[in-house]
Every structure is written in C-alpha cells, then in structure tokens.
Length: 177
Image (cartoon, rainbow, N blue to C red; front, side, top):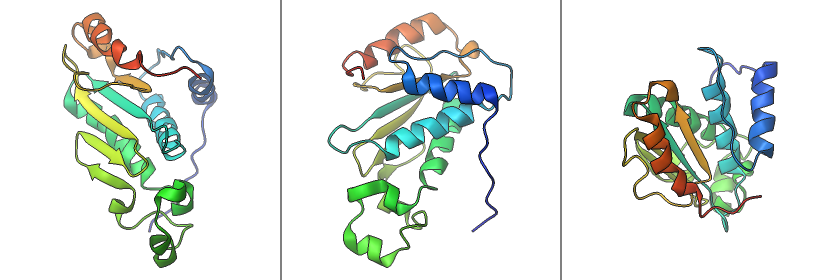
C-alpha cells in the first residue's frame, strides 16, 4: 500500500484532543497557521464516527469560508475513515465480507463502509453522517442533531457571528454526555 507514518501529536494537539473528548459545551481554538489542528480534528471526528453506536449515530457538519476549505477537512475525515481496519467497524460489516477480506486491513472496496460518499456528504454504514458546506446563512439548513460542528478557517468567514448563530441550533437536539 504505502509507507506507514506514525501519527504523533505535539503537546498543543494533545490538549485539543483532551478538550474535544471532555468538553460537553464545545471547544474553540485559536492557533497559528499550519498547527495541524484541522488534521487532529479530522482524526478525532473519524474516530468518533467509527466507534459510534449504530443505534445512536453521530452527525458532523464542517463549515468553511468556501466549499473548498470545508472539503479539505471533509477529505481528511474521509481518508482517516478509510484507514481503519475492518474489525473496528463492528457488526456493520457482514460476516461474508469479513471472511473475504483481511479484517486487520482497511477496506479495499469503500462501499463496505459508505452508504453514500460524494464531495459534500458521507453516510456511513453505521448511520453516521458528515456534511461539508460553505459558510452562509443557510449553511446548516436541513441538518439536525449535529454532534460535531466545525468551522474551519473561521477567521475568514464573512458575517461569522450570523453563520455561527444560524448553525448553532443544529446542536440543540443532541443529548449531552
């Protein structure tokens, strides 16, 4: 396949993971450019999606100042998801698929983990959903029960307060931990 690279986090990235895992109200970061926060956030969301209970699937909404910026984060999540070995997906992988594939390897056929996957939305076999949207007053329209609301490159979002205020209600129907 390719060369494996260790995913070692810097101290600030470790702090972000701890904050994401333990804060019920959300996490906001301010950072310098190229700090790896989007990558760590994408990895975190990917883990949460893979480990989600199919009876209680999770939803993530990625909003960027442009659709291209949102897609960058969205693609990171997608590529992380495709690297998880089959055994981590639990009971959503049919027995015959597990027998045909090495369960310690990631899926070679991505339809094994995705019901739908295009450049704006991913629907996983375990019921989880991930959306990429550009900022604007309608960025969150049609999305409810959002567990992860990510504003990537938010400093560049025009009318950021309005976009945030419009997107925040998507989280209101989600139970706290």
